[in-house]
Image 1 (spheres, rainbow, N blue to C red):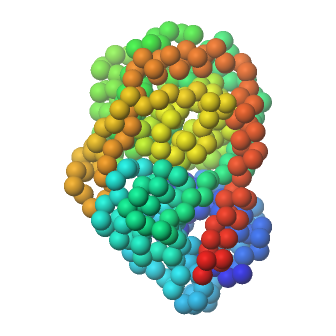
Image 2 (cartoon, helix red, strand yellow):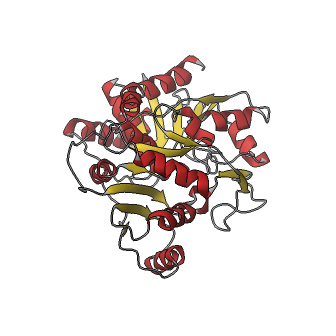
Image 3 (tube, one colour):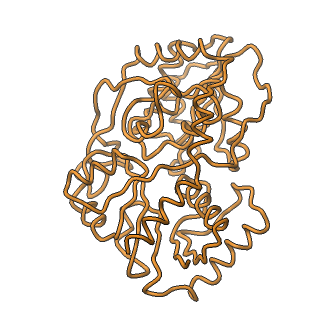
Length: 360
């Protein structure tokens, strides 16, 4: 089985998905040629010698495998996926908005398949007349595991992780939490939040804006964690995850991983969250409305990409969910753990290969 893979290899969301799929392709002994998007950087991952050799060989030998009849599997944004390496191209992409633009539809229509990790995204494109959209859920990363350690004693520990941006309601989440728990020593909020497009001074300005200049002794700001092993420790250390309060997601890897590790995640019941978060494994809150996909930076009005709305929530509902989560601290989220056991990258990769090779 020959396959061309065009994808980033790094510690960001696409890079993590790429690495997990490559690991499964290695187990299946797929003859792989990798065309990396950007410079490869595997420093975030624990890579076995055998897998490292497989990846290096796939990169070094990519031109030998290149053939018009070899299918390409590409992981990337719609923006930048208008070109292809071979005759058949199957694109895996994240989509967080609600209104596909004409250009997004045009690029999607160029693919043999467009695979989304969200039924919400799949349906958004199908409603525009596209018939080549498919849904394949992501899996639980096998590098993540329950450590069994005790971290903060006699403190209820909340966590927030990911990119700082309007879409994820980062500022609103933190300010809502501070209004309820700020400077109460029985609680802590650890924020592993950053934005690679903002420099250190800009991020400091962001934090000053969030806190309004008030010093909170139970707000812990953590620099971006470079390795997945460090992320695993962070997620194990918290009791309650707030990352699921994002207003638009293609999957929400941190919230999903936290839930699979047995933590209690507060999750907005919209977009891709509906593909994994349930009343049994999460603390769901319903949307109170929508807000335009605009932040003046990543999402701009009348742009050729990323149009529509994100979902929002009321502070009262979020606080009620936090209080509900408090009552569950000390209990393992067994349904979340079961989800992690059931939703694997083995299944994700098998579903992708079925689409790539059975629909040529």
